[in-house]
Length: 170
Length: 432
Image (tube, rainbow over the protein chains, first blue to last red):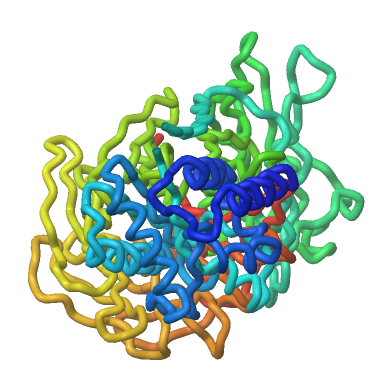
C-alpha cells in the first residue's frame, strides 16, 4: 500500500513537471497511468488523500474519489468542477471507459447499502452524461459497505467510506 | 489497455473435510434452566475409546439452548448406560428432572449403532428411546438428532441442533480482503468453506431442501447471482444482468428466486426469477430503492425493503403482482425483512435510538420487540423452528454471530476465531 502511495506521488510529480503552465487534458498518457494504478489498489487509493490534495487542485482530474454526506447521494458543489473535468476528458476521447464504484458506510442493512452506493454512482454518472459522455463509456457498480477503505466505526471512517471511485478501465 | 480483474476464485467442494471449528460459542444469560443429566455413553467396539463422545455433544447442545443446565459428570452418583439401571431416587436426590443414558456399539468397520433413552425422573418413566445407525462421518449428526428428540420431548419445541448455518467472512490479507462463504453445523463445528474470492460475496440464501445456496458474487467487479450445490461444489450463474444483481431468496417451492435488479440506470426493483426458464417478472416499479425481497412461508406475499416514503421501511406485495402495502411504521429505519417459518413474526434491522438492532414484529398484534443490544446488528435469520434467530453483531472491529430466542430471553455469542463474520443464514430442517 505504501508502495502505491509512493507511486501515486511520483506519478503526480511527474505529471506536474511534464505539464507546463497549461496542462493538456487531451493527452491521456500520464493520467492513464495514474488511473490505471488506481484501478488495482483494491479501493485503497483513498489512502493518498492527504498527500495528494493540494497537488490535485493544480492539476487536471487527478482526484478520482468523490465523497458524500450521510444518507445523501448529492454531489457536493466543490466536486462539480472535478466531475466536469473528468467529463471533458472522457468525452474528448471515445476510447475512454470508466467504472463508477459506489460505496456506503457500514451502518444499516447490507443490500440496502448496495442501493445507496448505486444511487451515488448514478448521481456521478448523470453528471457525466449531461456533460457529453456517452452512456457506453460509463459502467456503474455498487459495492455498498463491502469494500471499506477505513475499517473503523468513527464518523471520520464513515465519511471516508461514503464515496464514488472513478476508475479508468482502459 | 489495462484490464486487471485480479480474480482469485476458489470453489471448494463441501465434501472436503476441515477439522477444527472456527466458531466458539459462549452462552449468555438464562432465565430458569432445567437441570438434566446426560450420562457418558457406553462403548463397545474395536478401539479402546469411542470415536465420538456422544454424551458431550448432547450436553453441549442442551446447554447452548439456554433452557437446560446439564449436571457435571463428577456430580453423578451413578453412570448407567442401560435404561434398566437408572435409579430414579438417586437422580431425584441430586435434583435433575430428566436423565439421558445410551450407548454406541460398533457393528462393522465403519458402522455403528447409537442408542439413547430419555427418562422423566419425577414421573419415573421413559419419555423416548431411539436407536439409529451411524458411520464415523454421520455420527456427530446422529448425536445432534438425538439432542433434537430430547429437546422436543422436554420443551415441546422442535430442536434445531441438526441444522446448519451459512455465513460470509472477510479476512485481511496482504493485498486486500479475502471473502469466504462457509457452511457449518449450527454449533460452529464441521465447518466447510464452499467459496472464496478476493471480490465481495454477499447475501447467501438456502434452498428449501437445504441442498443449495444462492449468493451474490462481485467477481470481475460486477455483481451477479450464483446457485451452488453444496455436496458437489458445482455452481452456475443464474443472474448477470446489467447493473445490480442482488438479494436472492428462494420461493417456498424452490422453483423461483426473488431478486433485486438495478439495470443500467440503477433503479433497484424487485423481480421474480424463474430458475428453470430464467424468465423474470418485475414486481415493483418505483423510483425508490426496492430490495431485500423475501417470500412469506405460504408463498402468497413477498416482503421487501423500500425507501419510497423517505427512509427504508418494510412493505409487502402479492407474489404474483399488485400494489405494495406498507408493513412497518415504528421508527425511521426498518430493513431486511425475514419471516419466521411459522409465518407469525417478521424480523428486521431496526434503528433503535441511533443503534441498528434486530427487532421482531408480531404480524397479528403489530408490536415490535427489540431483541439485540449492539450498535450495528444486522442480517437476522430465523431458525427453522421459528424459536431462535441468528444475526451478526460487532465485537471490536470484527463482526461476530449471535443467536437470540424469539422472546429475547436467551442470547448466545458465537465468537469467530478468524476475520469479520457476517450475514448468517439458518438452514431449513434437514430431510432424512
